[in-house]
Length: 312
Image (cartoon, rainbow, N blue to C red):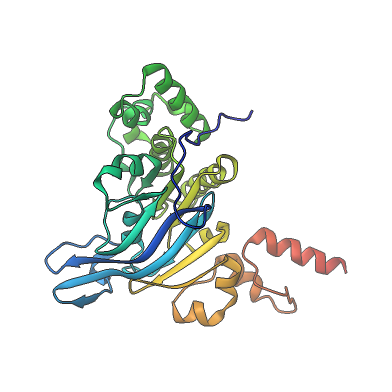
């Protein structure tokens, strides 16, 4: 059964000349002060420039994330990925340059409520986002804060639980759930707010393979069926294969963008940036006697190509 659309009904003001843009970075730099604690991947390995008592966590970033796209941001620890994510919904404000999200400037305090309602964040540890004593209460928490009427709130909670596949645990206590289930609860709580974009900052990093798959299945479904813009920050190379566009960061800069095929087909890029091939790519691309005519990204793609060649 087709579920009700989750996209908001309001109309955004014009963002840029490209009406398909949802998040736009215009020559953005973000600096931490020397004595400010840094939380971006492994803080001990944060590789940033230091100038005039400032640490440039990201520098001179210009990029666009299109509406309805699935974008993956990857890079080594300390490359600036998490800082970039926090800039997307105004948790951080650029030191220089401008970030436009959903047509709104993140540096304008008057836009913060609308930006954060429309661009939800899911972080690495779901325990930091779950605060209620039952799943359904946690999903409803954000709606209560913005004064959504009870009847509408119940409807939205039901929809979000259904889409995330957790209706059967709606009465459960969150602390009893698995890591994958907790992340689904976090996503459902954001989904109930009816965002146009969800940014996931290493949200699968603490999960086992089963939990990772369950979360990836949900966000792919939201992207394909609800046209929600997805920005996934990850160090798992197999997750890159789902993307429309991949953004590779190094030392606070965007050093490469492209499709997964473009990123992984250039061995110089993967070697220079220490990016590992997805497991399926490594296996199929190293099979002797088979020339697949390009980079294989998934096991399904590899098996299909292999069978087609064996039939000839």
